[in-house]
Length: 467
Ligand SMILES: Cc1cc2nc3c(=O)[nH]c(=O)nc-3n(C[C@H](O)[C@H](O)[C@H](O)COP(=O)(O)OP(=O)(O)OC[C@H]3O[C@@H](n4cnc5c(N)ncnc54)[C@H](O)[C@@H]3O)c2cc1C
Image (cartoon, rainbow, N blue to C red):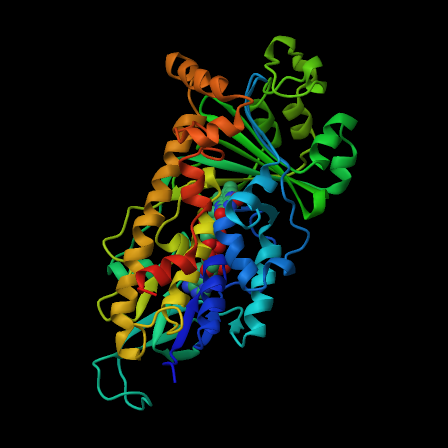
């Protein structure tokens, strides 16, 4: 019989639910405690990349997501209107290269799909349960497996007085993780990155009011970036094209300690005034440089932003790299934003968190990891988890800052050089792919894209386990 552990996951975010599903599939008894009373529409759109969708498919979660949109194109434009990079057949190419989809969805739709599948697998998901205390040194008295192997249980306390006693706690409590502070033994707050995000969702009725050409653009799933000095915009369709997600990334002007506030739509519009002027060439096939035809009065972004009636400003935060993701007793492990939050500039926060959950659960399965045959191997297994995941999670986080540098360049020589690189590869997708050179947009970079999207958690675990 494979060892069965009692696993408690703190947080029903994307990392926690991914871990819950894979740990349940590996035969463990899993409980997820979530502070929120309901799984509401927190956040907005989410870009799912093949490194995570291959897992969502293998868990039978992908078909449960409400109307994901696979973007037909990926386009990067200069804030003055010039097309810098463009790929047709983007989602198709992703499926061909990586064997799994690239898809845009609403965060809550993914979260609900994960919860549904987790519950089907017997996971107990408890809402309205805020974890407020962890005691790691509980003696194991009534254990059923093995003789004394020095392991201890964890006592988990919830703020309404309920208590759980489990073999392993998985801290998936996000950016503001309290478990992280417990692991470190001191209060540890996230750090500002210097940027903030305006998050916008245009609903069906707002889209209906757009200029017909703009409505067509919104209705044709594509990932679109506009990049300019110190700022960029990313936009894509979700829920089958009935919603349009727009994120504006700008320098942070929120006070210290303020994580999220309602923003002023007027202030937001002023920041992007004159960006992406519409022009005659808008109607012509790509690739084309059309800044010369600019007519600021018709700017597409200005039009999109003019429909926004409500917007939230989110301070973008990150964290120092931790010395360890596992506690000394080997009964607490951190995953997701609790240990490697990042800028959202490569859309990898959730995707890499899903990878974390998968790798952890797979390592706890003797059929994927033959070395895990007894609960006494938990410590070695968590160390292997850390070896496999820490370097990657932290490397992705660092890469997001490099994307900021390349997207947010001020006007000047360095930007001109960047644009020469963009221009040199425009319309040469196949050549770019074969070249294996670094490209300023990592979204289609032949070096970074395969490293991000080509990751296969199952292969990673089975390779490390010597299968
Ligand atoms: C503007 C923006 C755009 C983004 N776009 C993308 C994208 O396109 N693709 C992508 O991959 N990523 C994206 N991300 C990042 C992504 O949202 C996060 O990386 C991801 O949600 C992290 O998942 P998590 O489960 O680790 O944390 P979270 O999603 O934050 O979940 C943590 C959960 O723990 C719960 N919790 C906290 N404390 C406790 C406690 N004490 N007891 C019980 N429960 C607790 C919380 O209520 C929450 O539900 C974006 C982020 C931002 C800000």
